Image (cartoon, rainbow, N blue to C red; front, side):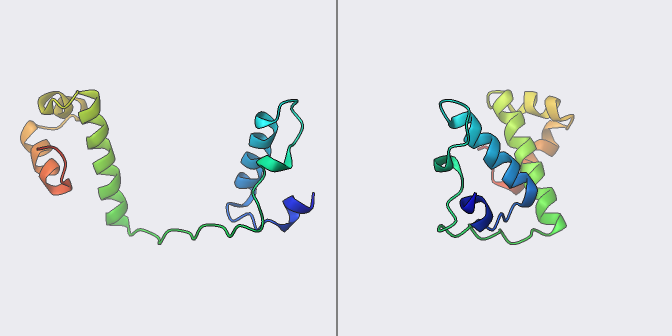
Length: 101
């Protein structure tokens, strides 16, 4: 119990819930094993700097394009169809995001 109360829980209730579930799942008999709980002596990683709206949109767009290219096995025409974009628009976005060849 001391390990649970001494940890700062930067992720709040969700992190606590996930940690308890993980500890129960990882233990052999279903009991909470403290070895699988966060160590309060290890500092929590710093929170990433917040991204501005445009940065988030660009990051999301890049991830969608990368996923479409992966699904299309690198075929740009197919990726454009998956994204409901023209091939020229997709190629423009590929250049902007530094993806593809």
